[in-house]
Image (tube, rainbow, N blue to C red):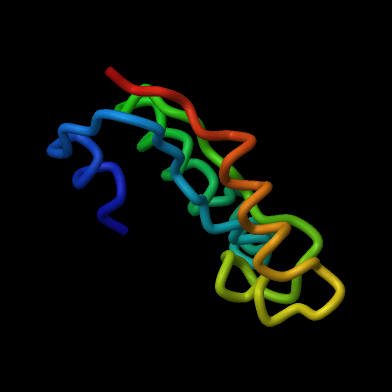
Length: 88
């Protein structure tokens, strides 16, 4: 992906959080969770927080919203706001 490249070019101010993809299936195959690693690296570049979707059918927050027992938009909002960091 290009998440890290984009993060290096962004000039962000305000509350910021990177929503990582949780590539569990890729991790099972190659031993690395590329989505999480790239998301954390991007968050480090931006000096902000990050969040990783867990307990879902799939790998990202779009999938989370389609997982009925996950908690919908209210949980998504809570996940993102609780991990946002102020960037100056």
